Length: 264
Image (tube, rainbow, N blue to C red; front, side, top):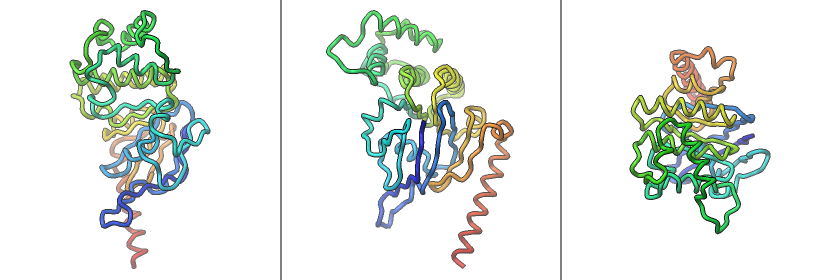
């Protein structure tokens, strides 16, 4: 479903601030894979998500979705295949528009545009039905401005908007990090339910290692723009936070030893 071939991205190339953000990364996801991504700040996680979504174009490499080369496709055109939820609950929705207007906009993302009314009775009934699945009472607030919703309500709406058209790829970029623990748990549970319901091929960035262990069928760890660890479904069930930290230290130590040997 998703294939990244030798993806390489450098920022500020040829300047004192040059940084290799992604270093020849290869990654493949089968349909229905749910991959969690962990790594320290600056590891390249968000840059990788931006390259997949089309915000950034790689300097080298290919991005394929469903066998189609989308490497140079614009973010706008790629959005028909990709749903994305950001860390900031204020992103991904239009605060000055109502709930039903936001839903209508998301619903039309992969539909042929026309001059017909965006919110029909049939669509309104459908919106109420999908909102009921959130168990937040939003189905009774279709005419409420999204800017008046709480952070958790808005993030739940963003998740729904990103997924109810069943995109080829779902990108979750630390989408629970800005929420209080109870709302974060709500969004985490909704994520599990929605991804399972639609069998969505999903990539989720998180700093919460327990969340990365509990969700999905695969886990990858990034550091310095590289994927340094991949854990498959069978081994993921045995993972612990302590084990992940130990593996990170072991890999980091091995890399530092190799660097010292090269410089010697």
